[in-house]
Image (tube, rainbow, N blue to C red; front, side, top):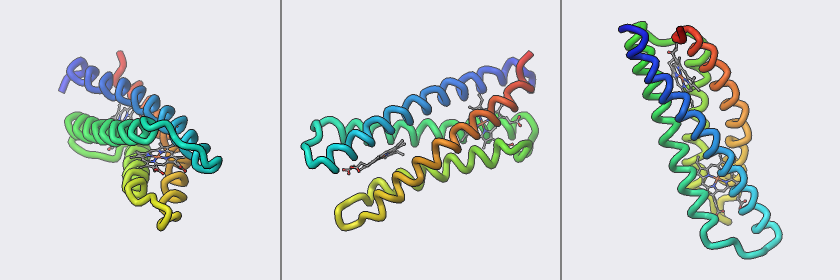
Length: 145
Ligand code: HEM
Ligand code: HEM
């Protein structure tokens, strides 16, 4: 496989990552907003929860796209996986986003642990995102001319 045919793949990765970070930011803002409204017992704007849901679904798909690009690109180039800590970082992010999304579907007054799990995984996810971006940026240098 020659280099130019691979660079576009990493460009999609970089763009997806930018959008993922934007989605994370908007999820954080809308999530804290929902939290505030709940604690202060004020009504939420009707669009707030659907917005948070939609952004969450977008984040899940972007992260899975990144996983697919990473696995296919690496297999295409090396024929094997596990060439740096970026593999662990990527799998960790996908695991956290999955736990976050699944726990989100369980949030209700009867299941307070689901909210704690949702918020806890998302706080850890912040660090994991930085980790995957730094390690991804590191391996991308090998492909740049
Ligand atoms: C992975 C995708 C995500 C999905 C599908 C999702 C979905 C949800 C759902 C359904 C709720 C419950 C809303 C309610 O109480 O009615 C919720 C709550 C919350 N989410 Fe997310 N979320 C996601 C990601 C995130 C992220 C990345 C953050 C923070 C950076 C976040 C922060 C919060 C917070 C703080 C709450 C609590 C709101 C409250 O206490 O009322 N969420 N989320
Ligand atoms: C949530 C975000 C991401 C996930 C889930 C992810 C996932 C993966 C996975 C699983 C691999 C295979 C690694 C291996 O087997 O060694 C990979 C490879 C790779 N990823 Fe990512 N990645 C993400 C973000 C990024 C970012 C932000 C970049 C940089 C722009 C990037 C660039 C690369 C490159 C260049 C490789 C080839 C690895 C190598 O040559 O050693 N990734 N990615």
